[in-house]
Image 1 (cartoon, helix red, strand yellow):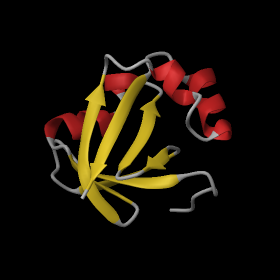
Image 2 (cartoon, one colour):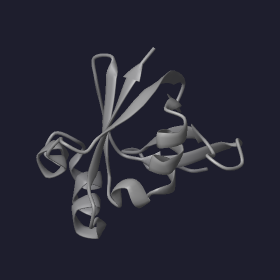
Image 3 (cartoon, one colour):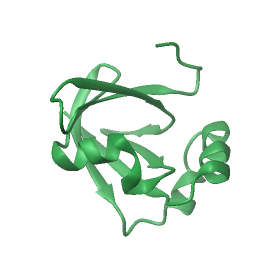
Image 4 (cartoon, one colour):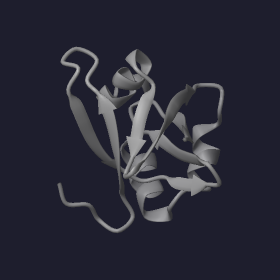
Length: 103
C-alpha cells in the first residue's frame, strides 16, 4: 500500500474476520499518543474494528485506541496535518476523534 507523505498506516484486527486490516490516515504523534479524526465516525470500518478490539498498530508501534465522542473533532483537526484535515472536514459527515495510547 502506497502512502502519501502526510499519511501513516493504522493496523486493526477485523471485527468479523480476525484478520489484520490496514488503513492509511493522517494524524499527529504527541508524546506517547497518536491522534486522528475519523471522517465517518462510528460508520468507518476501522472504528468498528477498534470498538471490537482496541489493540492497534500505528506504523511500527502498538497501542490501544480509544474513540472519544465527547472530544470536539473539528477543533482537533486544527491540531492535525493541514492537508489531511482539509479532506476530512470536506468529506466527513460524522467526525469522531480517536486517541491511540502507544506502548
